[in-house]
Length: 123
Image (cartoon, rainbow, N blue to C red; front, side, top):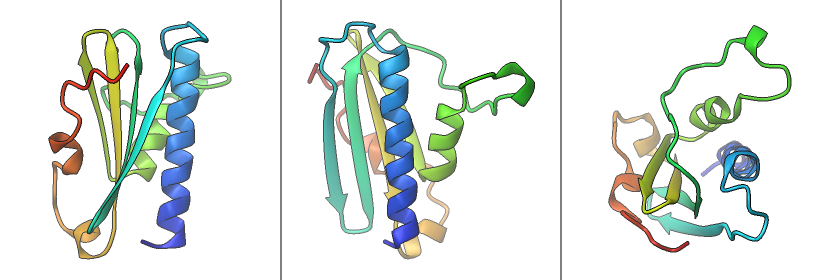
């Protein structure tokens, strides 16, 4: 994994945390659980937190509609190879995946996120 890949993933995770704080449960005492998983050819970052389900459609924001925000999902999807949300029992699980090596250029529509932390109840 290159330095640029790592920097991209760090920015994507920062955007994810900003979204959790801004749009999560609204309770400052609610924990956010984070896990980092290294696999042979990819790095996964998991965030699990309380929130209601929301629209995760990949629609780029219109600049004229956004004064001070609204680019978080767009940035995450631009910088991570896979961004996947699952919702279960009042919790949101976000998985960000960054691939490395030959896998990065291959056509893999579903990454390792799909096989991890399903229906997590860590919150």
